[in-house]
Length: 126
Image (tube, rainbow, N blue to C red):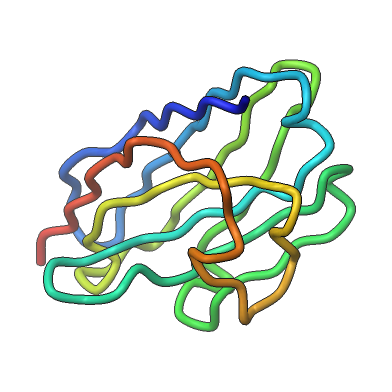
C-alpha cells in the first residue's frame, strides 16, 4: 500500500552533515505520521524522529535533538532528515517508516510502524 525508499546515506567525518530522503508512493502517505528509526550492529532498532501528517508536530530522541531536523513535503511525497553535527554514535542503518498507528511520540517503536523503507547506511568516522 505504501512503498518507501531511502537515499542520501554515506560515509562522513564527525561534525559533518548528511541529508536523508524518503520517497514514498501510495495515496495514504500524506495521511500518516512519518518517522525515522536507526539500527546499529548488535543493537535494537531505535526511534530517531517523527513528524505528523501535516508537518505541524515533531519530536526527536534526546540523542539527536538539536542536531537533526525532520521535515516532509506531502505534495512531493517526500520525507527528509537533515543530520548535522554528526557523531560516531550516529553510525547506523537509517529507516523511514510510516503507518496509521505511528504517533509523534518519544516512545514510538518499530512495532508502531507498518511500512518501512529498505534502509540507508550512515557511517560517521572519528
